[in-house]
Amino acid sequence: MDYIVLRGATAKRLREEARKHNLSLEEYLLELLTQDMNPEDKAREYIKASEDLLVEASEELEKDNIRQAAEKVWGAVALTVKVYALLKDSKRISSHGELWEYKRRLETELGKWAGDAWARAVEMHVCFYEGWCNKEDVEKAVEAVSKLVNKVKQIIL
Image (cartoon, rainbow, N blue to C red; front, side, top):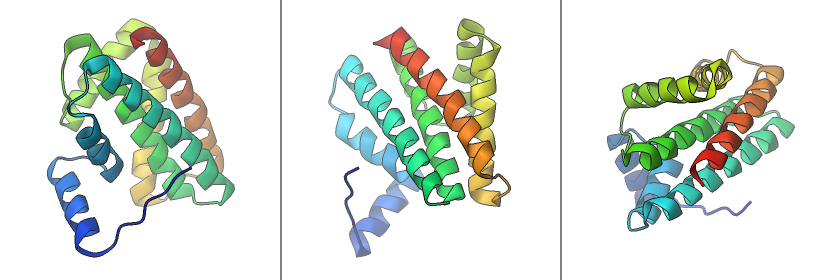
């Protein structure tokens, strides 16, 4: 995995801008990098980022960084739902409410298991803030969200 370290005013500004847009730092940077891409290329970048986040989640689990792993799972599912909305309806999702709307569409299209994968990811988002989950919870979420990422990848690419 490649890493970039930013400190000081640049890092602070990036975090502030991401927060203003209700995005994680990774999502915000991805949005900046893909803003001039056509929807198909942007979708490929988002799916690749989702896959990378799941790999990072597994790496964090190996280091017993449960909360960080959990948040990577949430990021993967959020990006996957966003790319689905982008290619299905040319919609840029900008709120949690819209994520839930498109989660429901995925569940209708793919079946209950897609909603279950979403629910596991939401649990991971809560875990990041509350710290209630354990390694096994995150492993199950990685597995469920991986299945969803792969299925959406098949549908849209």
